[in-house]
Length: 227
Image (cartoon, rainbow, N blue to C red):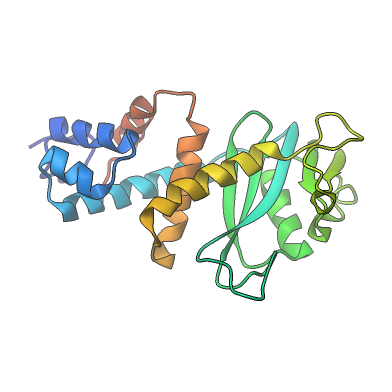
């Protein structure tokens, strides 16, 4: 049985294409198994392999340039009582970069200290960019690093779009956080070892939101078959 999209496949190419269309529709593994007739374990294996390919594609993105928004967010269980904001306990910290009106990039980080955030920004944002962030002190020093301009939004004063500088906001990356958290909440928790791949799937879907996702995934699997 020849399948150009899966190595050593016991799944026909026709069935795999049906599987992929259900993935694009964002159905659950249970629903995909029911609709394709595939074993649930087979569906889970294909989904895991597909998410790995998505993650690799996301990591290959070139540095972002132009007007770039940066922010960090927290994913995980409900906030621990008595802890709020950054360091809210038992949550996974994710740093994000958003090209204004374009793509996003996400990275799981250990903490929100200045060295961690500046290193993440330097690794993904072109030095000629104008960087937009909130007022967190961890973003101090970007201009000293050589970035063209650093503009801040003061969330502590309930400011979501700067009153002083037109177009200064981080609505793009915050919009992605909302999308990712809403989508991942469907899983009602996940093992820490799979969180990264689910996050990257959200990133991949968001970045190709204006394209034919089925064709994008088909090409991805053709170039790097699942195994």
